[in-house]
Length: 297
Ligand code: KMH
Ligand code: ZN
Picture 1: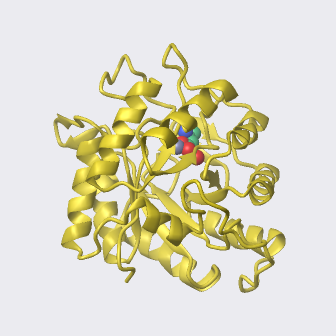
Picture 2 (picture 1 turned 180 degrees about the horizontal axis):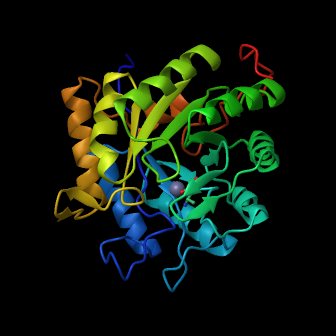
């Protein structure tokens, strides 16, 4: 079991309208305030989606750069930008967010139905994001919505080498309508695949969307995994009880991590785990090198 738990907060996705959920942080000020508050109760990484002045999701580089700078200024959190954006975003714009030079960025390993929509992640986009992150010194978090996407990750590493920093970290996104279910059995299947096909030392986190948040958290902790929570994924705290704010979700995750005797990692500890340079310091990354992933095609 790892000694501590990395807790990522995803405060604002691209799907929920501010008008429907007034507590959702959307402005730079609101997202910074949420990030600070979540850091205080145990988050070490923040996964960022950006909104414009009308609270609409945007990949505009001016807005993206402004939010990255503001969160960096106000917190020590690892800043992880979403390269997933919204289902309607053009693929080249999802790659271009890397120009904002975050510490880390998400990278989804395959196309998946996403409710009534399709979240498009063709192989060419996956390779482009992976190789651009290697070149720019950005650490990927590999987002996995279904078991087969772990085989795609093994193939990616086999053909294009390890990510910047040399450490592989996966986030299992569970319970999306169209992806794998948020169950202990599905998590266990993914963990077995991670252990048998990905480089030794690969770490994983899990995210349970909607009502799967709590069972996925408990299953992940029991399997030695890390956690991602936040209003991007969960808007109901308990049956009939809306989430008050992101801090409430991080505090619950941190409490469960404490009970599991794997307390939350600090942002500095998270950087060490993920192979990210100390805040404001020189790079810790290693040169990407091919790895034997055990017979990926
Ligand atoms: N908004 C979803 C379509 C990510 O951030 O990388 C994709 C998503 C994944 O949220
Ligand atoms: Zn996201």
